[in-house]
Every structure is written in structure tokens, then in C-alpha cells.
Length: 302
Image (cartoon, rainbow, N blue to C red; front, side):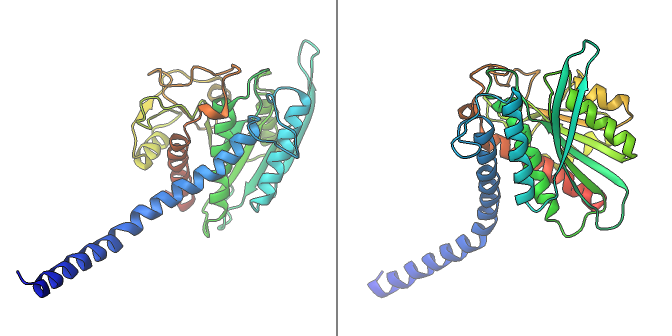
């Protein structure tokens, strides 16, 4: 083969490889871009909630258990929702339990209105407090990060055939006082609830299969999550206190966790080692994508 023929053959091969790369790269790049976007936003949320980074000024949280720490978190979530273009509301409460213990706190929420006048609401929720001395990364800063990102993206949709609401509950560790007070508000105000979706214990994936565990109150919701999930979904058999509580009010519920029954979950829950550095953010992004795709399908009326 003479040099001229070799040169032409080389250029043809190079051109074919270049065209093939141009055709294949966009899909891969878009998928990588979305994952990177989710991780970038969620790293910021989890870092601030766990004391890995200052939540305001130079203030770093040790946990999210004391009144001062929880107020700092509530302020941060309120500001974050506002920066995302939403209109956050503080649901303040000051109540006593039967023992006379006083609980003062605030749930932070924001409505994302339907574009077609629907009166139904899909609620995306997570609790934001922790037990004492625990940074609470997997329990439950990651759940907050999922709810925040999904709400932010749902608000950007041009069409929503149902209302959405994102809620961050206070006082989970105290017999779910914040959840109870907010549910009472929903009942008093007469909200028509389609379903409530919450994530907890999310962020640990030792076998790297990105699988999740799901508890759904009806087959339709379970099927929707399975349809939108490219990873294994294991059915949770044991109800959580939150799911039982919501069900008592007649609300359909979904709870997403790591693989608790398969023991692929964080060994540091409620401990001082439940830190930012233990979170698998690729796994968290994968789960977040599933939740967002489900919400997007509900927004379309599927």
C-alpha cells in the first residue's frame, strides 16, 4: 500500500470514528450531566445539614436536635426553597404532650400549584431533625436532599396536572410531633391529598447495585415506582411509624429506603459516625432520579 492510499484510508477511518463519537456522545453526556447536577446540589444540602460545611456564616451543626440547631436548619431550608423560586411557609407550633412536655418547632413547606386547576396534592416529604450527637447524614439529611431537588425540578415543569407540596418535618425524634401537627393542618384546611412520598435511611450502597426498598399503600403507586426504576426495587414488608400514621388519615403513602431487610444500609444510623463522608452520592442521585421520574409521571396525569 503506497503512502497516499494509506493516508486516505487513515482519514476515512478517523472520520468514521469522529462521526460515531458525535452520534453516541450526546446521550452519555446528558446522562452524566444530570447525575452531576443532582450530586452537586445534594452535596451542598447534605454538607450543610451535617456540619461538614457551615450552614450560615461560620456556624457548623453538631446535630439537628437542639432548638437552636433545628431553627438554623429551618431557616436554611426556608431560604433554599425561596432561592429555588418557591414560596416557602413556616408552619409554627407550640404544644404540650400528655406528660406536660413542651414542644416548639416549625415545619417548612411550599406548594407547587398545578397548571390546570386540580385540587389534588402530591406531597414529597422528609424529617430534618436528628437524635443528639448525630450529624444525621443518612438519617435523614439525604431524604431532605431528595425532597428538595425533586421539588425544585417539578417547579420548573411547564405543565403540572396536579398540585405538589414539599414538606420538611420538625420533631421526628419526639414522637413525630411535627408530622402530627402538619397532618392536623392538612385536615383542618381540607387539603385533598393524592399521596405522600417520603425517603429515609438513603445513601448507603455497599454492594453498589443502587437497589432500594419500597413500601407502598397501593399497587398502583408501587407499580409506578417499578416502572420508573432501572434498578432493583425490593418490597418492604414492615410498615414504618410514618406510613401507619398517614394511613390512619386515609392517605396513600410511599416510603423509600436503602435495603434494610437485605442489610445493605448504614451501620451508623443515630450515631456520631452518620457523617457526610459515609454518603454514596451516586446512589443518592440514582434514587433521586427515580423519585423525580415518578413525580413527573404524576404531573402528566399518569
